[in-house]
Every structure is written in structure tokens, then in C-alpha cells.
Length: 371
Image 1 (cartoon, one colour):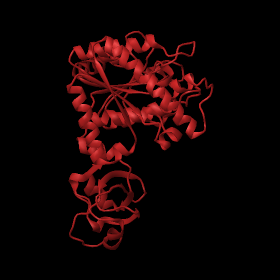
Image 2 (cartoon, helix red, strand yellow; image 1 turned 120 degrees about the horizontal axis):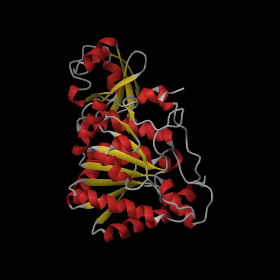
Image 3 (cartoon, one colour; image 1 turned 45 degrees about the vertical axis):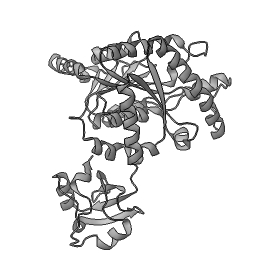
Image 4 (cartoon, helix red, strand yellow; image 1 turned 90 degrees about the vertical axis):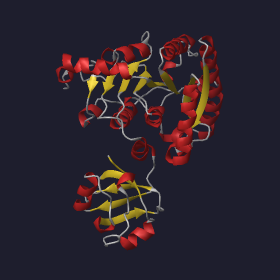
């Protein structure tokens, strides 16, 4: 049994967390599909109006807000009168295409009442893996924020087959937070936070352990994917990159403002691990899809951890068909990934030089991130 005492927050710790809230300027808010429908299975316009009103208030206070909004497929299902989430890919994409228009119309209408403009960005995982597209997306969002416009981001469900089949927007919200260098990620759903075995909300989590993961369960909702399992994984990505994450109930009154003013009393906060990582290293660690892997010996691992470059002499083997310039996993002798980096050689070239006194650095220390 997990004990609530285990997660009790000391007063000094509480004061330290609250002092950080004053520094929250760039805020990513993720709104889950479960919040878009009222009991009558129609778009819950009252809730959207509440969210946009809170966002407007934050912007007037000099803060920047980026929305990651689910709901396109759920709204499309409602319009098409579908009771269960379709399994056929073409039906999912059709529901997304119909629902995305409905979703943006609602946001546009309510933000206009607050004298704010909004912009739609539909992204795929390729927009994160490709460095040029990644930087372009970041520049677009930064420009929108300078124009006091609210970027509203969703997965491009109409074309992104892998996301629809396997993914969720929880991970997307964490990647967006990394992309824009957010100060905090707020994930809103229909739950109060992560519950312990006694069904009490855990206020603070400073490390995601197997015991914490065991408290999660997947969703059973008809229109949704993910659940607490994917929220914890998103929180891990966010926290590991240096961004605190809060899971809270979006149906609670004034919830976004409540989280900003007092994250300890508004759900579960996952504390950031250290300072925000360098932008390039955040991208390598969390937003790329490695094209292969390099296994190294203990000496090379120690050198990398000590912020040195990877040389061919310390490489044991490589796997994959990567090219020079691709991002690769770097694994120890137990095949456990501990770093990522940009390889200066292709897999074919590396296979010939591994273990040798090859002069060129295989992965330069500036292109390595320790996980």
C-alpha cells in the first residue's frame, strides 16, 4: 500500500515550489478529449469559454500561452453520431477532418470575444525529428506569441497514421513544451491528478519510479486514447528536460489560474530535474527518432559522462543503417541507452573503424546529450 505520508510536502519545500511560480511566463496547456463533451454528448462550450477567459487573463498579465488541444476525433465522432472510436483508419481520419474544423471554430469564437486571435498548427512526429522543420515550427510559434496570438496545436490526425494507431496528445504536449522552452506544462483532464492506493491525490512527485508507474491505468473512454499511463510518460519527458508538469482536473473552476498561482493545491506536480536543458540537447534527447545505435565499452561511457567526445577506439559495435549526421542511440555494454548523439560517420564507415585509433571524433562532445 502506498502511504499518503510518503508524499507529504514540507513547508520549506512548499515555499520553494511556490516561489518558482512567479517565473512561469511561457505556459503550455494541454486539454484532453474527455473535457470537450457535456453530459448530453455535445460540445461543452461553457468549459471552452472558461479556458479562453483564463488564457486571456494570463496574456494580459504578460504571460505567453500555447494550447495543445485534443478533441478533433471526439468531436468528429459526435457529429457523425459514432458511439465507439472507429478502428478503420479512414474513418478515424474522416472524423478528425470533420472535428478539427469544429474545434477551431469554437476556439476562434471564444478567443475573439476576448479580443485575441488564434492560429492552428497541425504537426506530425516528422516535424520534430527533422531538425530544419523543428526549428521552423519553433520560429513560427515564437512569432505568433510576439503577435499576442494563441497557437493551438494538435496532431495532424488526417495524415499521421502512426499517431492515430498508437499515440496520444500527452506526449505531443511534452514535445511542444520542449520545442518552445516552456516554463511549465499543465495537462488538463477529467481526473484530479495521480491517485495513490488510498485514492488520494499525490501532490508532489520528484522522481517517477516503478511504484509511481504502477499507480496508473489506461483509459476506457470511448473517444479517447492514452490515460494516466501516457500522462506519466509525458510528465517524465517534461521533467527530464527541466520543465515541471502538473496533471489537474480541467472541470475545476479557474483551474489554469489555480495551477499557476499554487501548483501544490491544484493536482499533481512532477518536479523538473535540474535546469532546462540546452535547446539543441532537448531536441536530441526527446524529439528525434534515432536511426541506429552504437555500443561502447566502459571506458568510452565514462569519457562521455565526463563530457568528452566519442572516439572509435571505444566503440564495440553499431546497429542500423544510419548516415553521417544522423542521430543515434549510444548504449553501454549491457545494451542500455545512456546517451544520444549525432554520428560523424555512416554505419558502414563506422563498422570499418570501430575499435581502431581512428583520428576523427565519431560523436563530438557538443553533439552528445547524456540521458
